[in-house]
Length: 218
Length: 310
Image (tube, rainbow over all chains, first blue to last red; front, side, top):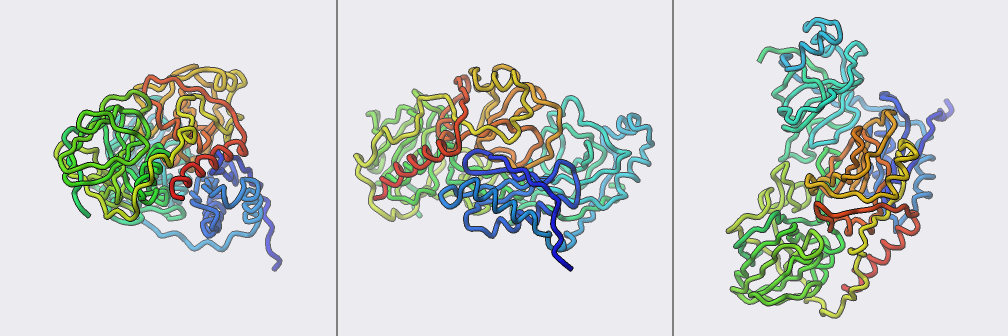
């Protein structure tokens, strides 16, 4: 079988003089994210690359400008991105117990015209993908969320969201790893710890992992 | 490793910082490290340390320290009126201390962050490959927190003799007095309305009181960005992020590692030391530059630092 050529168009933008952003797409899409993870993996092997951080549909690359120019690295990224990504190993599967009693559950149910039970069933049904880890230590953007649960973020973020809160917004779901401010809708909580400061890496989830929620009572 | 300095007064916010833990970004952990890498590296190199050794980062109001035993220190960055036993002490050079000598840094006279390095390098808790203090995770440096009264600061064995004081020419310093930060436009410059693009490059912004090592909130004209969604992506220090409210945030060393707000411009690496020396209430402006011009300035700073080691 001849190697499959990609139709992915890579858009590369400078991010200052020592980094660039390689965008592989503009949608939350598992195939694009898989390509981003493969591209980041290939870039990390280069001596002129300091870090390659996976985004939902992009890779942020910090490079050593004494070893390579922005333009030369951009050309190398375009070549790498047209290669067929390796067959992806399924990411590790995490099963996360959730008590679905979040402070926004009733408001979410009424806005979506669903019952509390329907929200729980819809949220716990898919196996989500970890699109990226970031924002705060241990936070992971999980998705795609079932369309029936799509809601914009809260117009005014909460100043304090307790660690362990399970939340939804847009096409994504996530778990707050630390007590932080946050604008997502809180539908439940889990006792699983996502930020493990005394482990290396200190995050339970990695980009490409899979996550299944299940309902529990305390 | 020996205890070399005792903390009599901690100052406003004094932390142990090296060059951070960039590899931890993939776990959502801020890279951290010294805000002004030029001043931090210079302080270390002046003492014969590795440029990435840990040192004290003293913010706005500096600490009072007492030497527990003879040691050599160097103070760089912001002018916090450094004194030894009450007499004015030189900056950007090695200072020999005898046991009992008092090093005091006071309120700022210029800049925001002074660096105090110790020959042999400050030694703190190592977390994820770095001694930098991460207050949110309560790890690294002095047990993950700023210094407090009574702390004892340890240093390693000096590896090389201090550099001669005249080894540094002041004109090699970053242009600290010029508060117009040079930026490379993008990646999401196209999200700015034309009027806001003009406002970004023609207006003065003021650092709000809510500015810290994570980022600077900038008060000024509100910047309009289109509502087009940006999928979450990896961020870097220097990124100028514009949230929906239109009040830009300049991300600094302890920045969030990913976000979904448009980044309309990124400060050139050679201007980050200048950004690091801004304090709440200071005015800042932005001017576009090219990658080539930014790299020239970066190379000049590298040469200035390398001149300290030759």
